[in-house]
Image 1: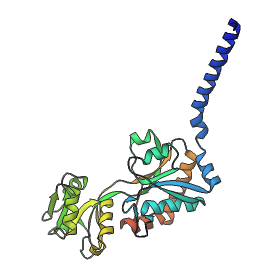
Image 2: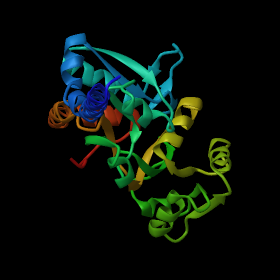
Image 3: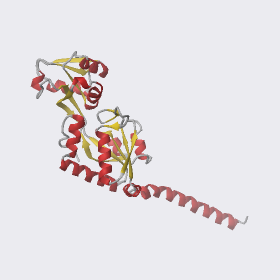
Image 4: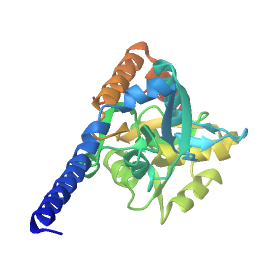
Length: 270
C-alpha cells in the first residue's frame, strides 16, 4: 500500500469515526420530542405504576391494578385517545424504566427533588402525598383540639411524629412505637384510637382491615406527587400538563383524591 493510499484510508477512518461520534451525539436530540407523536401513532401509551403501595397502586381482589396512580394513568390515556399499557415498577427501577424508554410516563408517587430533575423532567403535581391523623369514621375528630383525651399511635422519630409534636394539644396520649409495624399493630388491635402515619400506610390499613372503617381526619404535612417524563420530551410533558390543568378545573383531580385518599387534592403546585 502506497503512503498516499495509507493516508487516504486513515483520513476516511477518522471521518467515519467522527461521523459515528456525531451520530451518537445527535441521537438524543433526534429522539427528543418524538414520544407524543409515537404514542398517538401507536395509539398506546406505556405508563409505569406501583402495585404494592396502596392507596396509590395495588392489586385488587380481581388481581387487577387499582389505586389513585392507576386511575390517573387510565385518565391520561383516555384524554389522549389511546390505550394504556400499565407497567408495574418499584421505587428503585421506576426512573430507569423512563430513561430506557420502557415507559413513556411514570405515575408512581414520585416526588420532585433537584437530583431527580437532573435526569428526568416533571409535569405539574397531580395528587397529594401526605402524613395525617387517621381514625374510625365513628370517632369525631375535626380539629387538633379534638385529640385531647384520645390515644394516637405514631412511629418514634418519623416525620409524622415530628409534625404531630408541633400541633398535639395538652391531654393527648401519644403512644410512640419503634417501627411502623408496631404503630399499625397498636391501632388495628384497638390499643389506640387513632394513628398518625402516611397516606400509603393508612391505605394499607384500609385495604387489609375494612371493618375498622378508617378514614382521614387531620393533615400533618403535605408533599405532592408529580408525573415523570423523559428529559427533553417537552411536547408530551406540556400535553400532560394540559390534561392535569383541565382535570383540576373540572374537579376530576379532587374526585380521584377524595375517592382514594379521603380528602380533595386542594391546591397543587404547577
